[in-house]
Amino acid sequence: MRGVVRTLCLTVALLVAVPAPASAHDVLLSTVPEDTQVLSSAPEEVVLTFSGEVMDVSTAVVVLDPRAETVSTSAPEVDGHQVSVRTLEEVPEGGYAVRWRVVSSDGHPISGTFTFQVGEGGPPPPALDAAPAEARSPAAETASDQGTADASNASTPFVPLRTSALALIGALGGVLLYVIVLRLRRASAPAAPTVNPTDPSEKETR
Picture 1: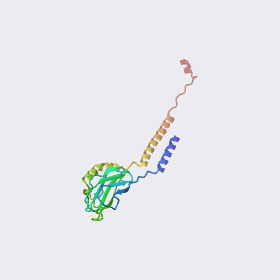
Picture 2: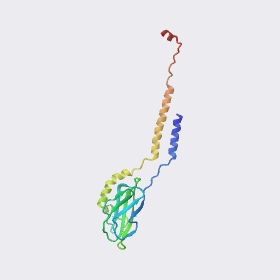
Picture 3: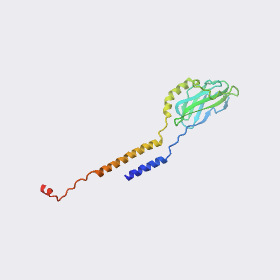
Picture 4: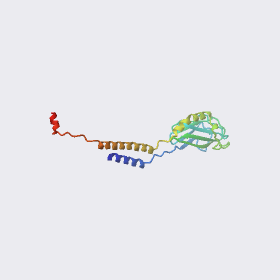
């Protein structure tokens, strides 16, 4: 029983000493076009590269022209660390804004914005907060709606290490209790009677 108690105490000490693993959100590493980049012609697609493999749920990438109208023509495509969306082949000169939202590999949503310029002239990009939900393309809206339920499941936090530790401690406590009860039963059980080989009654039976 001392060995069981020693093991239980050691397990508790280790689980308390080991810190729970920390999870970090993915970050946006680069974009094509780059933020504030000036292009001679409109890009065929906009590509975002993240530090981790983002989840293919509730992904949204919207490209807005100077009048805050959507010029992205496809639902965002997720490929590992990259998310891309196609744009109109011909757009007027001016500034464009990109608003994006993805679900990080740790299950948490992240979002951001950046701008780029087509040509040397034209009006400036729209305000970065000028992308209402109805401005998204129909394809992007459909993809976002389909991924809403999955995103809620994906953002469920992982079971903490200490929760598992408590379950393990409970199991070890149950084993310890069983050992104690078993030993108490053995100690309280009556001793079996011993037979005396020289008992006279035994001789008469023979």
